[in-house]
Amino acid sequence: MARKITEEDLLAKAKEPEILAMKYHPLYRGKIGVSIKAPVRGYEDFSIWYTPGVAAPCRAICKDKADVFKYTNKANLVAVVSDGSRVLGLGDIGPEAALPVMEGKAMIFKYLGGVDAFPICLNTKDPDEIISAVKWLSPTFGGINLEDIAKPKCFYILEKLKEEVDIPVWHDDQQGTALVTLAGLISALKVVKKKLSDVIIALVGAGAANINIAKYAILAGANPDNIVMVDSKGILHEGRVDLKDKEPHKWEMCRRTNKKGKTGGIKEALEKADVCVALSKSGPGVIRKEWISSMADDAIVFACANPIPEVWPWEAKEAGARIVATGRSDFPNQVNNSLGFPAVFRGALDVGAKTITDEMCIAASYAISRYTEERGLSEEYIIPNMGEVEMYIREAVAVGMKAIEQGVARINKTEEELKRSVSSTIKTSQEILKFCVKKGFIHSLPGKF
Image (cartoon, rainbow, N blue to C red; front, side, top):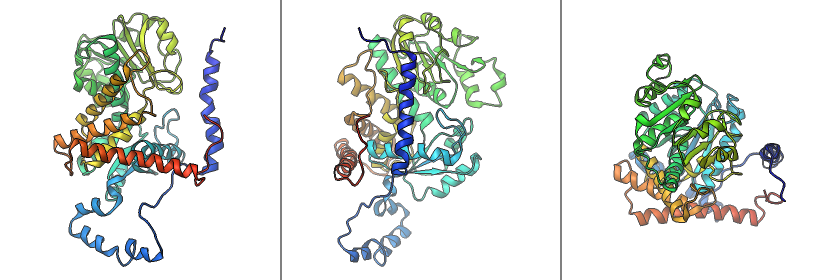
């Protein structure tokens, strides 16, 4: 009989990537670099790419700033901006320590979306200075990905930048987590044959991610009266006047949700709930088995804290949950932001979108869910994994077409034209990397992880 996997086994496995990361990060000295796109047949070609030839596109852009998208890489360049104030699982570690995370983000952007992303770690935590820095940088970039910035300032920074720059600005901890979670929830509800408009949803944690998940769920058809959110002090309700001036986004949830006026904590929030979405603190034991037992039949539990979920998946199953998702790759149904941001930006960039709207994000959620359904929904497959390239293509096309429909795109394309450009960019990026590894220009890691 096979030995039962213990909690100690899982903790040891969770540590393995850290051990390998410390071995290989210094070997490569980071994960990204700058590569040349245009050919250099001989040194005389620099007269085209640099002086004197470069003066011609410079003059063209000077006459019409919109031509910068035609003559430069701006149309495919995204800044990954962070102050290092809330790095996942690490907290406020500062800009230098955040740089490996932002490089990793840029690596995923390139491999899964064909997007040229560059990490920008800022030596300030002042929200207005961050806004100014991004505005100063915006002439170079076609999009901005805000990353690992603490709340509540992350809300303010995103809102102000969306108002003040004419390129897509995105905060992955808000929009990315929300759209991927919504995609998984849409699919999970299909499996258990429940409607989003009918279910009771308990949100454990009231950070940027869950606040945006509530927002997207409502836009997609959830009834706000049936949403109950819990922060570290208990359930949000209209009696929580302590939040009115200090945290306006939480106060909005107090006003908009939980119309039955539930009070208490996680235990009370989960009673009779159809869905639990937990993005709070690392477990286990944050959510107890007996609390899950009090949920409705065919309960759905998303326990997405890292590195350890709020409740172990097998405990949630033993307590009666029918579908369980986590943020980890070693359990079924990983809710992974990497399923969202590369494709969302690919679609937005390919049509020259001026912004990323909520509707574009929800279109991405439905595209992910439709793809999953076509592949065959089940209790252990409600969301794709990172290796399913076709999903990224479908998602990017859905985002781009929604941008065109909403009138925020600079470039009009047919769905087929967009699909061709998206597919070519993503697949070319992956094939170039594979070629470089095969030829030894990039040294391959030994063994298989």
